[in-house]
Length: 389
Image: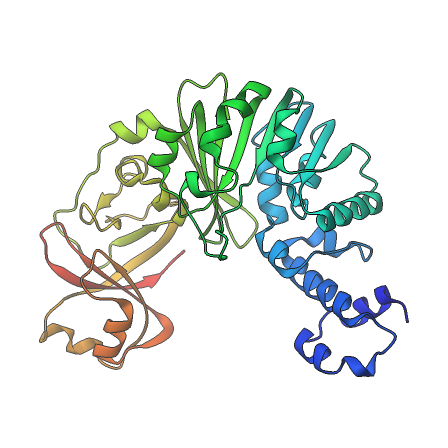
């Protein structure tokens, strides 16, 4: 049995169990087989096009975890244009493979020799002849990099101890030190950063920021993208969320609109009305007032970031609920919660979800949703809801 045959035959197996019984397969390089089986298991949903090709090689687990999904890579490719592009931090090469479908020539730069070899193999398998592979650190390559239409960079966001880091200046390479050089050699620079990064800090620290793009998948924030453009004059925000059905919610607005928008506040929260929770991309953008004005919904309170309307607002970018009961946060009224089964979210509330569950013996799940929050009056309440969207 060849290694490829073994991998395909055991794609759905538990890799820990295979490792424990590797003596059963003396003819198989089990270490390599486990890397490839693990890679295929992750690729099945994250990288369906690669998964469908049995000849694709995969890297170690960390590189698989850090690589873009096929879905987000295609979205990034839609944001930039031109004929030539450099991917300065190639990694497993998912972004490079997708960018190369749109650009005439792509240069893949990667300092890890093994990843370069994997990329070389996969390019041959996929017959990608417009990708040039360069084994180099991005800083060394940048010193001799020719002028191109676009540059993509995904700096390392872990320190020497493997801990996650979020500040721009702590990433490797330090973008604050090379941003001007990148712009001198490229009309557009697209930067992938941690979703935990402070957006205001990024705008203040980096030159020529033209777009802030926050990408979520099924309401989980995955990527913060910043585009630098030599012709930038106004900053645009894109708040994007890929839904489970494959469709996409996207709201685009200018920084000026963000700063000048007004929020409208409820006078009274009513049973039967509708409660809205913006998706994670909108929440990350800080567009709290813009959401109120754009969707014509009333804000619950300044810092609660929940919204209300008496009539249903269709196509809201987030979750929509119908209010069934409003319970004041006091010992007398909250007795009704004891031994309830519900999904709980806190927004601007003094105790955590875990504490609420423990205090009232509330089990997780079911069709009831509880929002523990603070109203504009300062009153603490539990808003009982049923989910619509």
